[in-house]
Image (cartoon, rainbow, N blue to C red; front, side, top):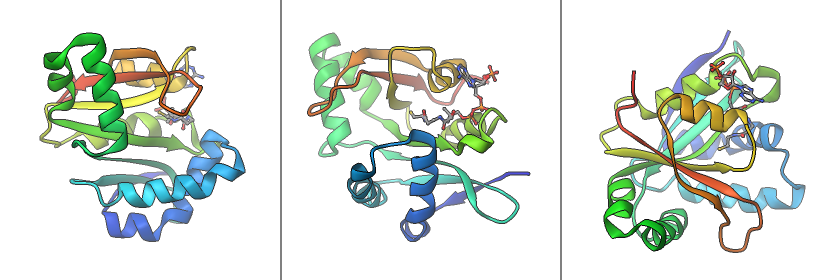
Length: 183
Ligand SMILES: CC(C)(COP(=O)(O)OP(=O)(O)OC[C@H]1O[C@@H](n2cnc3c(N)ncnc32)[C@H](O)[C@@H]1OP(=O)(O)O)[C@@H](O)C(=O)NCCC(=O)NCCS
């Protein structure tokens, strides 16, 4: 049995070990990237209108985590994606999607708990009640992943595909959805 619980930035920062545990199990990142990821997450908690959902098991252990915040200029992801959207589709398009956006930074479910509807509940729960015009996110591109399937099924569309972030090599899709989500 799993329940969703909303977490503020202070508890999120205190529970970073548990957040990183879910992240590590879901994404299997190289071990040497974890301290950098921890620093990025700690920094994210200070962004405006930060919100997080834990999906917890009956012992209170998080088995799913999603968090996001209001995107504003000066944030790395926001600035990189905005520049790319302007180059590809023009100022108006970029402004429409990023000018008043909830940026969904991370959504992960522990592998032992995937495929049970937790990811869908996290995405829907993160977007529910938000006042922004849109929600935006990035996810690995190039295959029929569970994440792409999930996001498209709740109304996200491709804004950029096969996008490579500065300093990276993997390809990402940048997706956006109008808020509130359909349904
Ligand atoms: C993506 C993720 C968060 C989804 O969480 P989840 O709890 O497994 O998702 P749900 O059980 O809510 O299922 C969501 C949908 O994905 C589908 N799905 C599950 N595995 C799939 C796969 N391998 N390929 C395609 N679709 C898949 C499910 O069938 C469901 O769709 P449906 O309702 O139309 O049947 C989870 O798989 C995960 O943490 N993956 C690894 C980390 C990751 O990629 N995070 C996203 C980074 S942007």
